[in-house]
Image (cartoon, rainbow, N blue to C red):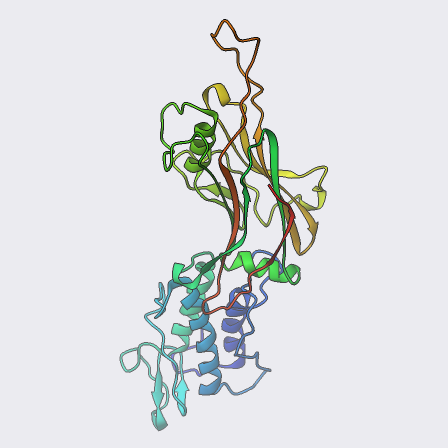
Length: 338
């Protein structure tokens, strides 16, 4: 830390900017970096740091923190943050206008000193994985329907592709995620009823199984569901360490949810594999594995296995940081329909 009466030199300025760049900029090539172009630029040794330079650095800090805390941005360790005006001399703890030089305390101007910029940079670094919900938008990539009856297994396969591997990183580093939903309506299920205990028909079992798992979220490092009976998630997300070993023959399971009672063999599941550094394929399976159970009717000749009826729906959507950061939504290709 410079002394109280020191000005901000290029070394101090570049140190703050480096912290900002690791969050707002390209980052470390992995789990750090929002991928945005900084307004501020690094300075050479002995360069004078002008108020205009601090203004650009201020803009970068505000952009990152707005994504994290909303508008107007709030600060955890910085006592607020203000941008220096043209002509100000920026010191360690405050900035004074005109020929008065640098303040020796923070009374005159609490929010524009080097220490405030440094604290603000610490804020955005410590909170790089904390996001304001208002900075995101949700859009449907594909909603797939099966209106005819089915048995055995039906699948919905999609490929999600980013412009390049870095854009894939930025999507997840900024809090983006891929979301999966499924439901069954009509048939012999009770409309809107996902809580029947125990459900009476195969359709009701499927409706309850899908309805109570909620929304499945494939994120940065995990896949989880938010329902009242959410099924089994995994620690597989975008940064899964073994993507290179996956393929259509050897996918990684990311989620599963089983049926109950006589239909406990039935399962909804998602597996995934990497098709390229900028692309992931997801195979969503509705597996009606129940082959029929013995019934008490003496006239029965053996197990009975009814079809799943009604409308089965599988939806894939994106949560994207389209706010102040302007992150682009990936493309989605449908490889197979229900």
